[in-house]
Length: 264
Image (cartoon, rainbow, N blue to C red; front, top):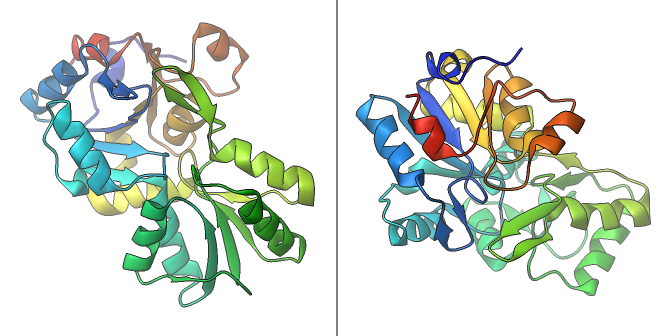
């Protein structure tokens, strides 16, 4: 059962914040988002940004937030790409990895010591790839069809922008699934691997954490399906119709981060 807007926030010590559609839209900060951050800090709580958008890396988001008036460390920003890197290092150490991703994501994999290859991979990964080509799709479909394990950084179907929505990793995976009949193992939000990584890097318990975002099936579900809280804000993809149609029930719903700040 949903808690009152004030009651829901009482025990939260760490807010894991989505970015696109929650803190900003495109290059525009959402009204009142900075007020929320200041209120979190003033009340002795902490925040961590977590975005499923693996087309970029933490250093990029650090610079983007700075332009919006918020100075953070790179360690304050985690992406689904980071979760995927940790997963590969834990379960496929030293293996040959084929990755469909942006040059930034590819470089982060290489920096982490992951062996990226173009042929004969042990594992294939699809991400939100704005450099996607037919050749890349043909390759990954062939590998998947031949039985190579198929991972995806995150399941988001669309990425919100100032001008509407653009196809995200989930939509790209749908094409691969349609061609091969094989579904990927998704990482990122709302998967357990995301919660595991947040617990590992912050030291908080699940009961002290709230995931906050504009998507029910990723942001909210990460919290409520993994023992934490999941707060929905109505500044991005989801609206009350989405809530009515969803199997996932948010711990609480707020119009925006700014409204949430009033109850802290």
